[in-house]
Length: 293
Length: 221
Image (tube, rainbow over all chains, first blue to last red; front, side, top):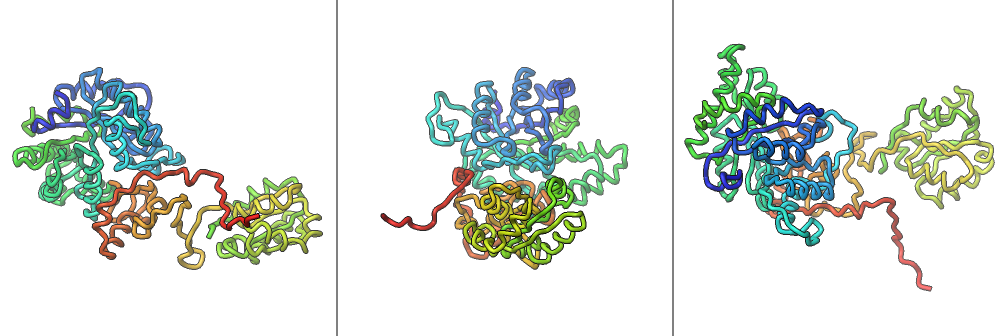
């Protein structure tokens, strides 16, 4: 079954992230794909994440398919104008890529080519509309195309954004623009996430809660201070501290597994998205602890 | 107004190293307010050039340096001083520099300033960019705050995931344009309007360069 079919069947889905490397040596990336194969339902292939130049998402999506992983093509609006985006979407479609995650994209100032001209000809809401158009046989200018795409299109949302209401307004616009599923920024407070889900459940879209495994109390503090939309509660930081340096990562994995288990058991959302950031090997372990394998 | 910033003097010196005599043109509008092309700046430029062994044959502050015909008329009395100069240094914006280029086809003209943006002055010599001159105004849909300019990504439909406590991922000094728009629309009791309006992708053809405009009605013959 495809990711779309599994998600629509009501099964609790698991996606994880595979980050293309900088350079043509893809041995480690292929290893990560092999670790995740058969375990997760789809793999997000990031698009020059954090505006750091790497292998393009589309090529890695093709490699993922060759290695038995269903890819979700992450597509940002930072590096291509509307012609480039649509052209790449058509290219992805003929390669057999079925899922696309539409995002605006981190600003170039976050990355390793700070002098680059940011494009942002369109943004996430408009990109979703573009995908919807291509699925219906029309390009953005309304021209009829010979053959349409059949994408399952998703978007991102930050459930713990501060302030939250403007983020929710945008969430609604994304739904209206055709988003079928959402993958969230990392969440650490299930009660707050439940509040967000009360809003999301007004719409017939699927929501996958995002997870970034905490490796230490220091990392938790770093996320709180530096990463927008991430709030690690003090109780979790204390739990990591109490575990001590050697057991911090294991405790972090337990926290993630515990949260995932709760989300599934209480039927809070439709699945989870695990952003392992270099620790892809640990994804199956977390899934096992969460009772998903 | 057009916000300008003085170029590095060594870069200007590199440009003008082949010339010995100069005429200086400032501007009484934006460049004066920016402190890049008013009387004190022209005086200071004259002094540093003379200290470098260069001659300054004269200087003049245009009323509105981007107004070609007006500037041409104003410069008439300075014909001798300009003739004596091998090179003109313009201490206003890029538009002012190109007025001089148009008026003096046979003379070298160099800019003393970098032209930065169209800005509002918030305090004396504090400038903010608020309009990108995109050609099709959307302020009617965004509570009068321009996200094309105020948001580094020019997002048209709400804040990105980089908004942290109401501030931008680019810099904590920048307030998120969409949080500002949200707050203003809330004050105006127009949140419903904000929720219901999806702004379409911009038609950038209105910003296609070079732009021209004839604002007056041509007289019928």
